[in-house]
Length: 58
Image (cartoon, rainbow, N blue to C red):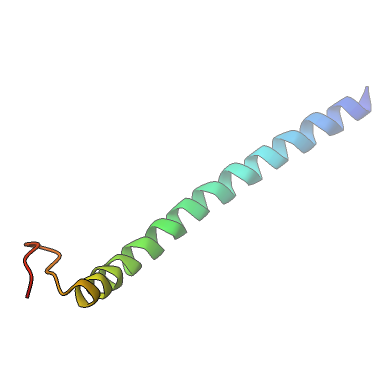
């Protein structure tokens, strides 16, 4: 009976840690994406010689 309690407590701790880590990871990934997007747009504009806003050739 005591092993059942340990298993349930272990699963609860594991699921709480997983959920917390997932939320932190999603926030961190979103922040990295926000910082990376302008660089990617500039790189694409330089490679294709096309404006990313109006889509006209320079």
